[in-house]
Amino acid sequence: MTRLFNDPAAFADEALEGFTAAHRRWVRPVTGGVVRATATPAGQVAVVIGGGSGHYPAFSGLVGRGLAHGAAVGNVFASPSARQIHSVATAAHGGGGVLLMYGNYAGDVLHFGQAAERLAADGIETRTFAVADDISSAGPDESAKRRGIAGDLPVFKAAAAAAEQGLPLEEVLRVAERAGVRTRSFGIAFSGCTLPGADHPLFTVPEARMAVGLGIHGEPGIGEEALPTADEAALLLVETLLKELPDDVADPAGRRAAVILNGLGSVKYEELFVVYRKVAALLGDAGVEIVDPEVGELVTSFDMAGISLTLTWLDDRLEELWRAPADTPAYRKGALGDPEPDRDRAAATAAGQDTAAAQDTAVSDAAASGTTAVPVASDASRRAAGTVLAALDAVARVVDAHAGELGRIDAVAGDGDHGIGMRRGSSAAHRAAHDAHRVGAGAGTVLTRAADDWADKAGGTSGALWGTILRSLGTALGDRDAPDAARVAEGVTEASAAVRRLGGAEVGDKTMVDVLVPFADALAAATAEGLPLAEAWDRAATTATAAAAGTADLLPRRGRARPHAEKSLGTPDAGAHSLALITRAVHGALLDHH
Ligand SMILES: Nc1ncnc2c1ncn2[C@@H]1O[C@H](COP(=O)(O)OP(=O)(O)O)[C@@H](O)[C@H]1O
Ligand SMILES: O=C(COP(=O)(O)O)[C@@H](O)CO
Image 1 (cartoon, rainbow, N blue to C red):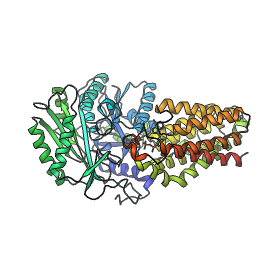
Image 2: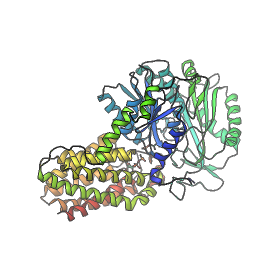
Image 3: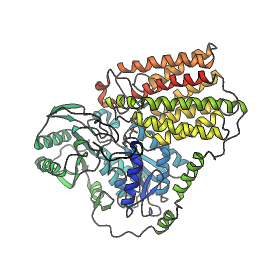
Image 4: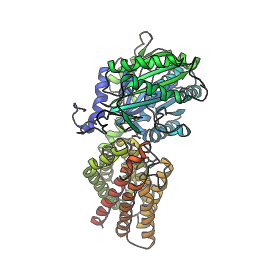
């Protein structure tokens, strides 16, 4: 149970505020997360990590010398937005380029990828690397689909230590790749976590049973077995990992490995030590030499009861990097000596002059007060903007009314945060649209402003995809003339294509694409017949509702639900369902504004 919170929607922001207040020796806050309190030495590659909140010490607790230069911190169980990542990376950049590192989740991949493009456009050389160590989440033939769990730490650390040694960006990336392919994790769980504000855990495991193959977002395991003794748990973890060795490790005997026994949140240290006692003995029996083991909480999931074992198979180079000193709020190793305080930045921060943060704040404050200049729009487009605003109001209201239901559907095989993310995104989009409309924006600009704020405030997979949908529509509608039904249909078709390009999903994968494509097709067909917009939209929304219901019969092939495919049979996809609800609500707004 997560007991101590104020407004659940503010939990991640308030936790970050308290974290930075408690750790000023190591970190300073910037828009979107934290960077080291000391400046990145000139020319050094900056390793910027990130992910959702709820996993402490991942990700903010791993910022400091010898480890990350900055961390972008998202909402609970949702990736940070591209704008947050861009802001943190800009603040961390020391002239040597940036390596963005994160766990392999759809939301992170989308947002870090977009941030990399923006950094490159700013002239900052940037590479990305997604950690994919969890062997339970996909088979060896699909290892690129695996999610990142406690293996984040050794892979981040290898790359960061290489950066600290002054290696150029391409070599730091190669180190990350080498550590990545040699890092494997596997876990078990006894109960799921309870998100702030929720009254029950994301999943439960029957008494005297355990879930095998856990995720770090309360995703249930891929199997279930009888509750083991500590020694039996150790045996399962070690045997499973020794069965899947990296290609160039034919035999564990005589090999060295970094070992992490990770607690997910409510398994206590003594329990971990009892398990580790046997892990060490079993690895010893297999001839594995353990190097600098870690036993403790390194990647958590609130109060989830579970443990995971991670092995990184070392070579001389990876061992040197694993043993290298580090000094962060949550991870310290060896001795680095006292750092020179970052006087310039400390003074600037105190005076409220932190450049990246100050610029971002200025932009968002201006946007919030509606003072940002908007492009000139025709009267007709400004009138259409009124309809767009009403539609976005309807979107925010329908999402708010169904947020709990969306969370429950998402929790069946995902991480339960779809309602939270959609609520944050849709309300931010409505606010941005309102501000833009107030200062005379046309329909296109109202939609693109709403798009940016949806993606930024929601983060996560759906934040990136909804940002893309609204932006595509905004681009199609423009600010010049009154958009007719055919133009709206073209915009929806473009949005459908853009979501498929960005997320890579196709019809049948059990995602929102299963609704977006038939909705776009039905709208295009109805407008081609000459139906007025509200009527055409009504017909297409009916198609969308049926398509969303149809996703209950599908097995997910993408996103977080994929490893738990069977569990999701009989339940529609959360993103498909929310999209169908939204199309119906928008129809109401179109009728009212007819
Ligand atoms: N690759 C993808 N392409 C299109 N939609 C996707 C993709 N991956 C996931 N989704 C949609 O996103 C929804 C989940 O949104 P959200 O809860 O924000 O995601 P997460 O917490 O997994 O980041 C899914 O129900 C699905 O409809
Ligand atoms: O959940 C996380 C990010 O993945 P999404 O796909 O955005 O949900 C996060 O907690 C790990 O980075």
